[in-house]
Each structure stands twice: as structure tokens, then as C-alpha cells.
Image 1 (cartoon, one colour):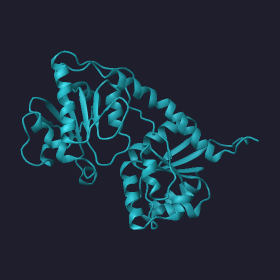
Image 2 (tube, helix red, strand yellow):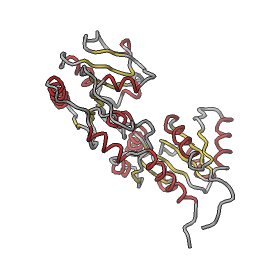
Image 3 (cartoon, rainbow, N blue to C red):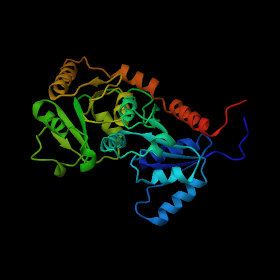
Image 4 (tube, rainbow, N blue to C red):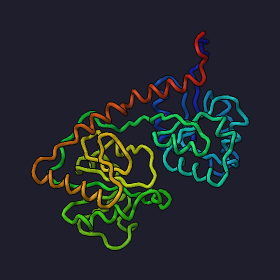
Length: 316
């Protein structure tokens, strides 16, 4: 293998939450990693992106678009070095929608390296012509140990406040749950009360955004996430790692899969009854499985190895 004269350089673009997490993690593994926010319509901003891309060994997009008229096409045309697109939730859905409109760039499909953060995206993206590999994103917020469940049985609900993000959530079912289960207390984030329709039932507290998610997990025994389309949910994994019960539309080891109002209410009633009878302990099995499958250091090391394989020649 040829020795490199400098630390490998990676420019991260796309979703800021994931981009900043990955940049920090890769810097800890010897990369010169930089995250650059989306420049919007600024020509100077795009010029800075182009210059940074030209100086990088890899351009790494968390998310992206497949349409022909997109800056990714320009980056692929200007440089012959690797470009990675790591697909997650909404962007994978938009890519499928673009394919159904017939607006997919062959250059992006064939010229980029495609990874996805959920195993079911492999089949979804195949509709666009993309051959993607399942590569989990490292999750930095997992708890190292299980925490006791609270004395009062509460359930955490999640419904985004932004209308675009809310489109892929089953808001109707989420907001029906407190009415169907008046004996159970619910806490909803990050949508404040004024963003929700009608008067809230007395057993629903809409707190809006919270800065102390750890404290909130300690208040609840279960977390409900109902979506029409989703990637691997960091919140679901965080809750499981703390020994909470997770009810989710999508399959996840250690969680309860439920899609309809009846399925979700049935699962919550069973948990609440076990709690009332003193038979509900922390979800130890869910916590164990999450820590085994999504250990941060292990996933980051695997991602580091995949990136290095793209730029370093094979031995011999």
C-alpha cells in the first residue's frame, strides 16, 4: 500500500445534524474532516464548496438529490475522486418520487458510491437504479446502562412542528392516542400546543422543543413513533438503550412493531397493565440488542474503513 503524505481529507455536505456528528467522529479517527452548510442560492457559497471539494479526497453527502439539475451533477463532472451519498429518510423518499417522474441523473446513479442508513432503503432505492449498501450511521447518544422506569407510567410521542417534516408522520393516529387511552399520560414533543389542532385532552402535555432529552427519557416508560416513511430513528435507539419500550411503525429488534391505531393502543394497554400490576421492568433485551447492533465506536470504525477503502489502493 502506498503511504499517504497527509491525513485523508473529507468534505461533508448535506444534513447538518448528521454531517457535524460524522465530521467530529472522523476527525477523531485521523481524518481532516470538514462540514460545510448548504450555501443556498449564493454563488460565492457554491464557489467555496467547489474549492473545498477540489481539495478533498472524498466528498461525502448525507442525503442528497438524484434529479438531473442538481449541484451533485456538477461536483461529479468537475472531480474524478470518490463522492459518497448516504441516504436517509426523506431524501430517499424524494429520490423514489423523482424516479417515478422520470427525472433521475444517470451520472449520480452510476458515478457516486451509495450507502443507506436503513436496510429497507436498499429495495426502495433500487427503483431509481441505485445499488445501495446498508451502512448504519453511528449513533452518539446511546446510554451505557439501563435506567429504572419511573413510578408513573407516561408515554412519549413525537410529532415534528415543521409541516414538511410532519408529512411523513401519522399525525392522525398520534393525536388520537390520548383520546383513546384517557387513563394514560402522554408527553408530546417537539410540537407546542398552539401548533396542534383543537383543544388538547387533559392527559396530553405538548411541551414543544426540549433541550434535556435525557431528563425526558427518565420521565417516560415508552416511546411511540408512527411514520409513513422513515429511516433508522436515533430517538428510537436512544430510548431502547435506556431500557424504554419503543412502539414503532418499522421493524426493529427489541421494539414493538405496530402500524394501526388498534395495534398501538393494544400494545400500550398491555404495558400500562403490567406497570399497574408491578410487573413492568426496564426493557433490558431491547437495550442489549441496541448496544450490540449500534455501538458507536464499532459503527464509526466500520465507516472509517469503508471511506479509506475508496481512496487507498489495495495491497499488492
